[in-house]
View 1 (cartoon, rainbow, N blue to C red):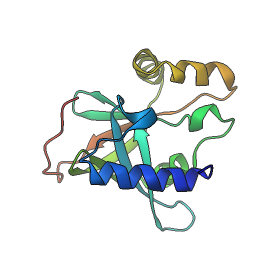
View 2 (cartoon, one colour):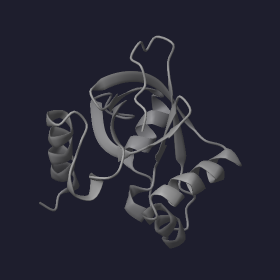
View 3 (cartoon, rainbow, N blue to C red):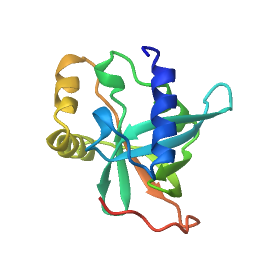
Length: 147
C-alpha cells in the first residue's frame, strides 16, 4: 500500500481497534490522532502523528517526513487552531499554536533526541520545520494520559 492516505487510514483503524496502540514503525512511539478542519474545504481531516508530552501539552512536528513543504494538516490548524486529539481511548479538545523561537528549537531538539529521524529530516530540508503545541482547553474534561 503506497498511497499515504491508505496508510493513514490503516493506522487510524489499528489505533482505534487497539486503544491507541499501533504496530510496525509506530510500535514503540507515542501516537495521537489529530482532528483538524480543512483550511480551504472546511471538511474534517484526521492524521496520525507521533507526539511528545510536555507537561500538560502535546508537541507535534510538521516534518512531512522531511519533505520540502509543510504537511496539509499544518495549514489546517493554522487556519483553524481549535482541534481535537485522540490519545489512547480519550478525546481531548485543544488549541494549536506554532511554537516561536527559542522554544521551537528547544522542543524540536527534545523530540529529535527521542526520535532520531526528526534530526535527519531537519538536516535534509532547507525550510524550518514547524513545531506545534497542542494545549488542552479548559472545556476538555478528559484527563491526560501519561507516556
